[in-house]
Length: 281
Image 1 (spheres, one colour):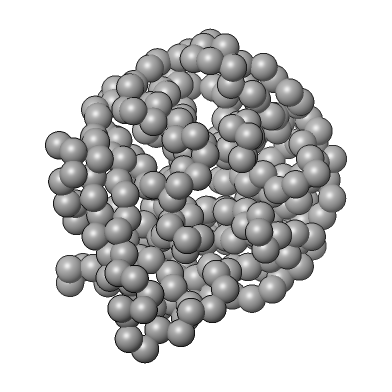
Image 2 (cartoon, rainbow, N blue to C red):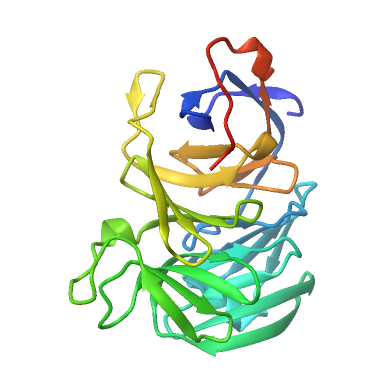
C-alpha cells in the first residue's frame, strides 16, 4: 500500500548516537519466493536493485519498482557467502575459495570482471577503492577477523581485534561492513555486539563507537540484522529484518517472505533540541 506508515525497529545514528525522531513511509512491498532471502545478506545497489542469493544458490533480483525476477545462470554468484555492491553497480563476491567482481549487464546477463584465489570463510565484504576490498571472516592460520585484499585475491593485511597466533572470535567476524567513501573509512558492526568499529582505509583502528543497547517498544534487540546508510549520510542500524539502502538513502527491508521499500522521514535537525551535529562516522 503506497504511502503507508510503517513501524519497524530502526536505530538512526546522529552525532553522539542520539536516536532521531523518524517516520518510515512504505512505498511498496512485494512477496519473494520462499527461501530467497537466505544467506548471504541481501545487497542493495545504488540504483535500487536488490540481489538475494538464497537456498540452493538461487538468485532473486528485485528492481527499484518492486518487480521480482529469478535468475539462476551465474555460477559465480551462486558460490557467494557474502555480497556487496559499489557505486557503479558492480557486485563483489566472497566465496570459500575465491573473490570476484561481477558486472550485471541485465537480468540473466553478467560479466565477470575479475577473480582471485582467496581461501576465506567470509561473513561480509565491502568494496573500497583502487581495486581493494575488505572481507570479514576466517583465514586458516590467521588470528584476525578482518582482511584487506585486492580484487584479484592478493592479501594486503589482516587486522582487527586479535593477534597472529590467536583463534579469532566468531563474534568479531560475523557482522556488517560499510565503506564510507567520503571519509575513506571502514565501518564494522558485529551482529551481537552493540558497537561500530571504525578503521582507516588501510585497516588502522580509528575508534569504537558504543551504541549502548537500543530499545524499541519495550523490546530489547540483542542481535543486529543490518546496517545501511540513511538520509544525509546517517547510519541506520536494523534489528529483526535485513536492511540495505540505495544512493538516495531509501531503505529496503528484507524478510524471508517479502521486500519492503521504505523512505525515512526525520525531523529537521533544527527541530531536535539539544542535538549538536558532528560529522558522521
